[in-house]
Every structure is written in C-alpha cells, then in structure tokens.
Amino acid sequence: MENKKNNLYLKDVTLTGYKSIEDVQVEFDSGLNIIIGKNAAGKTNFLQFLNKSLLLDYSVLNNFKTRLTFQNGHEVILENSRAIDIQELFKEKNKEANVVSKLYITKKLIKDIKGEETTIKEKLSQNGVIFSSSFICHGIPHDYLLIDKPLQFKVDAKENHSFELFNLLGTASLPYFTKNFVINLILEILDKSYQKNLTTTSIKKTLSKVFKFMEGLKVALQRYSPIEDFRFSDNFNIYISDNKEDYQVNNLSLEFKIAGNWLPFSSLSDGTKRLFYIISEIYDIPNDENIKPSNVGGYYGRHRLSRIVMIEEPELGIHPHQFHKLLAFLKESAKDMQIIITTHSPQSLDTINQDELHRIIIAYSTPESGTKLRHLNDAELFKANEYIKDDFLSDYWLYSDLEE
Image (tube, rainbow, N blue to C red):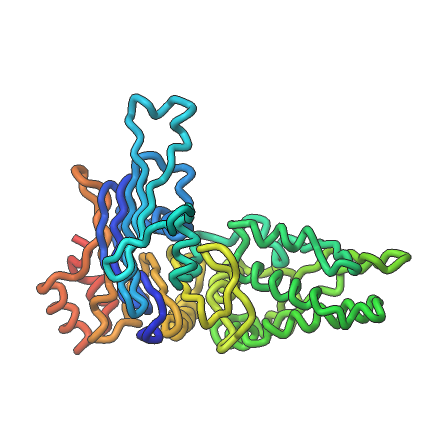
C-alpha cells in the first residue's frame, strides 16, 4: 500500500484554532489512513481545517497555527499562522491581517531572494514541493458541472481561446474530474488542426478526443460500481458563427449506462452518484503526461504532482457490497497517492493487514481540550492482532471498547 518512494505525502500535522480543533497533532502514513471515532468527536472539523491548510486558504480563520510536515525524500515543513488580539478583532483594518508563512526543507529556512518578495506558493513551487489535494465531503458537489449541470462555453476560433473555460480553471471548488476535463478540452482547442475545416463534425471529433482521457475511468467504474459505461448526452448543441471565427457549445453533459439503460445523472440512485463522485475524483490515468492542477498554483505533469485525497465517510448511502468494492478501489489507488478517510463503518478496517495497524487513527473529544487524534496503544494493538488471527478486524471495533 506504500506510495512510490519519492511521492510527497503528509507525515505529521499540527493544527490549532478552528472550531473544536484547539490543538491537534497526528502522524500519517503514505497510502491509506483511516480515522474512526464517535459522532461529535471532531472528525469533520479536522478534515475541513486540514483541507484549508493544504489549499493555503485562511480567509475565514483568525487566530490559528498550522504545521504540515511532508516527506518526499526530504523533510518539508510548512508553517502558517495568524494572530489577532481579541480587542482588535472587529476593527476593519485587522480583518485581513497577514498570514505569517515559513517553509523549511531539511530543516533549512527558505528565505526570499535578496531584493525580491516571494509568496509561499512560489517558494513551494520553486523547491519542487508540488501537490494537489481533494476533499470529498458528504453527498455530491452543488452544481456538479458536466455531470448534474450542463457545461456551456464559447471558443474564439481565430485566437484559439475560450474565456469561459479558462475562468473555470480558477474556480477552487471545481471538482478534480471536471477540472481535468476542462484542461484536456483547452489542450485540444489549442490544436489548430481541426480549424482548417470548422464544421459541427470537426468540433464533435475534438470532443471525442477529449473523451479518450476518460476511457480508463470507465474501466474503474465497471469494476467498482454499477456504472457500465458513460458518454456525452446527444442533447448538446453546437453553433458556428457565419464567419467561422467563433463557435459555441451548449448543454454538454454526461449520461450513464446502468443495467443496460442510458440515464441522466439525476436518475441515478444516491449511492451510485456517490460512487461516481468518489471514484472519478480519485482516478488518474497511469503514466498520464497531461498537465494537472496543483495547490501551489500552476499546472504540472502528473509525474511531478503528488496527490493527497481526504474523504468524509465514504460509506454513506452505499450498499455494503458496493462499499466493499469501493474499499478495494481506495486501497489500490493508495499505492499512488495518500488517502485519508473518516468513517463510521467497521467494514473499512477489514482493508487493514496485520502489519498496517498504524494506519488506524482514533478521534475523540474532551471538554478541556476539544478534538484529539491518536494511534492505537499497545493494549489495543495486542487486541487487534488477536482479532485478525481469528476473526475480522471489524469485529474488534464492533464488540470491544476501541473507541472508549
């Protein structure tokens, strides 16, 4: 389950100053990490704060500190903090107080080049600390573009440009799958060959080329979900201007084959929607050299980009048999990226082997110090090993005091 040797992954996290996250420190492994814990333990708060920290998005935070330690063959430490005196908090000029950021690589502080001021994103990029994070929360995205909401865009054929598509790339909330589709679409538009004879047929061929990057995803969906296939719906329209200097594509969306029938996304069951969302957000084409979005700004080839994926309760709304398949997908995918899930499903622990018990993290809460995260102690490790020998690790969670 280990990542490739030099893939960047989160090794240690310390977070302070967000809801119930008063002071949390936890270590992670490359590959799959499973956080369990009772309701109200603060698992969601932790993932939300961690997601903001990875995105370097501190717009709604006031007094906070974050320390993220990455490993990619070197130790990389990223520290961010903002401290506002409570008496000054409501003064307009202090609402946007600067975040203090520091980057250490192998314990050496990375400073600005003399005479230049460098942002923390620039420092990360310049030093090869390039990663992309995804937070897959409850349900499915609102206004799920291309999936539950049709995509529409206009292309200046003369300039090879689409303002709508480029603007989408700057949308932080755009799902990883949709963003990858838009990137591939832009790359095809930049290829002028189809413009020599601009017709509805040539534009459809361009869209078909873009669709090729999804072929591997089809295989993954066939293996791990009820989705047998997917394609562009026939309902989309193409309008070419009289002078052929621009064209517009309207109502572009996907439809899905379930039990031999083609259906719009809205007609799928909630569980199948959730499976598509999770699998499509995680799946990456093996050895794909096309550029991918990063958290540090810019776009990079997949071989330069490490991925960190956080999933909130992946079992919600999914049949136990399908969830078993999804767990197999997550474990396989965790060979190439770091995956951190929160869960209430004992079944999730059955993906853990006897030598992987360090991947289990328990979330709990105390009135005095809020949310805390910890690994299994020696007594719990002994019990877990006994259960693995005779039964399933899920039984340990179900029939013992693991969360006490």
